[in-house]
Length: 73
Image 1 (cartoon, rainbow, N blue to C red):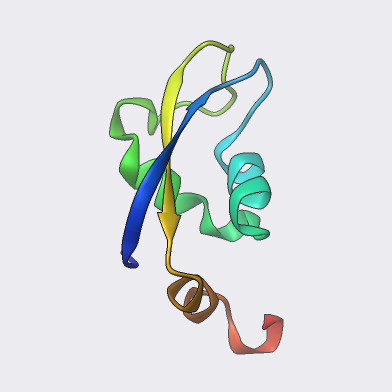
Image 2: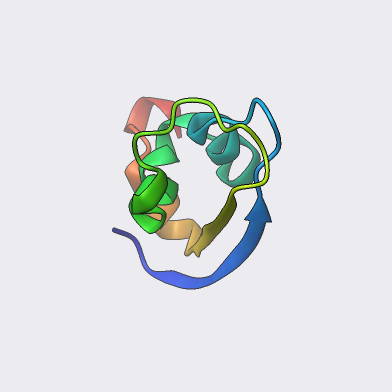
C-alpha cells in the first residue's frame, strides 16, 4: 500500500465501480485496489447501487506512479 496522506469522503452513485472510481481519482483504473483495501465492507461489490459511503485514499503521486507498469508511465 502506498503512503496515504488523507481520505476523501465519497458517496457512491448508482453504476459506480471501483475501477471507475480509481480512474477518476488516480487517472488509472488498475489502481482500484487502493480503494478496495480502504473500504473492505464493500470489497465484494461489483456495481454500486448508490448511496454507499466510501473513503477514497489520497496517495503520494510518486507511489501511485511506481504502481503503474514502466511501459505505461
